[in-house]
Image: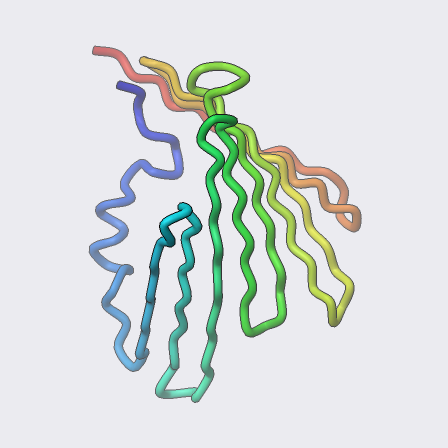
Length: 147
């Protein structure tokens, strides 16, 4: 079994203090899946102190025979997001995805190429931030395990 990715190390400990224990915030998440395999999830929260209300909608569709996953997101800030991922088709354990966002009001766009490779003794990630304004940025990590 592959070790966890760097971002997942200590996740359970962080979740004890930060997940689901927000005072003054009302939160609702709803998900469903159709017979054809399309997943819908919607959610939102209301901050009782400031009166801020935020909502989002996400759809996800998997094409299993090609290893593809398509995901579309939209939130109340009018930010549109799309993720396309292909997993275990180019190389076993390799996942390559492209994530982009677009704000119709401001015209701002972001794009990120995400790669993850998991093998028996190593998990490695490389994310390429393809920002046109700030220039490209590369984030990498690796976790090595031995038994």
